[in-house]
Image (cartoon, rainbow, N blue to C red; front, side, top):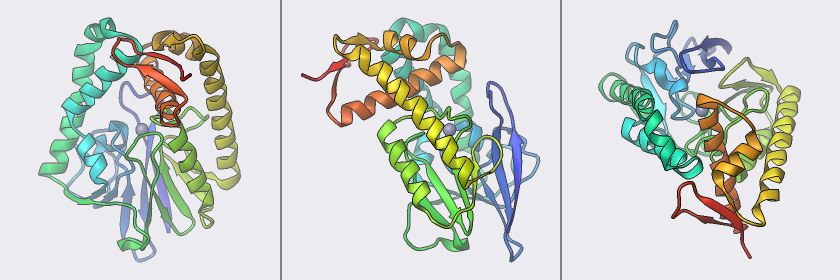
Length: 290
Ligand SMILES: [Zn+2]
């Protein structure tokens, strides 16, 4: 099997998104994800989707009709209104109610991309829902459910190749929706014994050694943030204060991504019963549980 990496960019993306075209030994072409460019340079007529984020699916808008394997979860998330209310919830919870109005218009324009993707999926492509299966899927792919970067994330394994989407992002700058689930995902990927090359959602393929290095760097940066967060928790803190304390000065989209990631830490702490979150105020307040 040969794999071609295609790098795509589209504003406001900072790191170009990679998608992959696989040529199987029997001549079948399979594509993993569709990239950020709505007019993709190359396509295959079977696509496997890793997760719902637009920079991995926007290529479906301009691609010719194909068979798209996607989880039901991902498919349900690809929806402009839903994407918008998720953005709004993150901003209200972490930064505060007042911060929504100034970014609303830009957020609406951005969220409409999800409607374009959904329209393309519904009107042009053939959609097949895919969930984790012990049996190899048609085409000899194994699917792993890998939440952490997003709740719906899937990874694909084929022979000595693993396609992990945004679960591995150089240099350990993965944004998270759930820290503990992300850790389980890393363990799951590393426990698969057969892969030799790992294909990330941004950047170029890497080997096992390099992957381990990336994971260690990621662990370290997440642990550091968790420590900084825990130092604030004793007396209780507003999420905006925690955000500024942990991430320092960030602008625009990065500020939003950091806010989303902060909720990923808090969800994990809440799930293990360590913190109490007051969600009746905006921004939310968090403190250690007595
Ligand atoms: Zn993503």
